[in-house]
Image 1 (cartoon, rainbow, N blue to C red):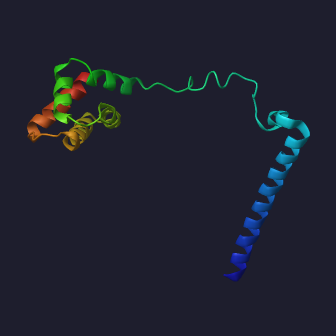
Image 2 (image 1 turned 90 degrees about the horizontal axis):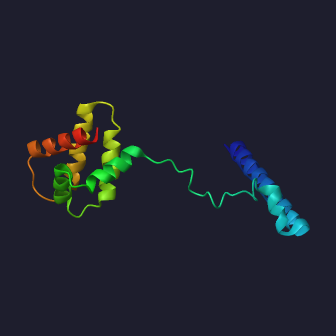
Image 3 (image 1 turned 90 degrees about the vertical axis):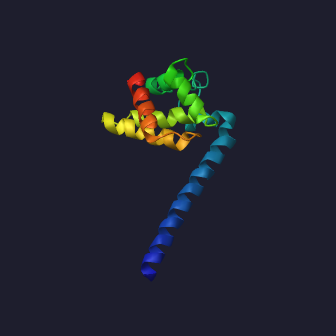
Length: 141
């Protein structure tokens, strides 16, 4: 047990020593090269990475479709908005998108029903809730 603790301390000390040496080297490069030392440590520092920041974010067509649907004039969307009341439509869309990624249709409808049951602010019977979940899934898929 004592040998293992000494080995752990030795390993930690070695990694700390390496990190300290790397920091000293970086500091020395800064002193030697000024701000140009960044070129040593950063790839493509002169590139257009700042201008293209966020362009590589992948859009999620299913999530976008759910958001568009929830704010639409569709009867099912209007019912959903009326029933969920104070719940954020964005948060609801996030939860519903996870449900629609489920492979089996019955499981999708059940998951949507569960999400709606957690977010609905008024009393609604299970049959009507299941019908609403089923209509939502039919509209989106």
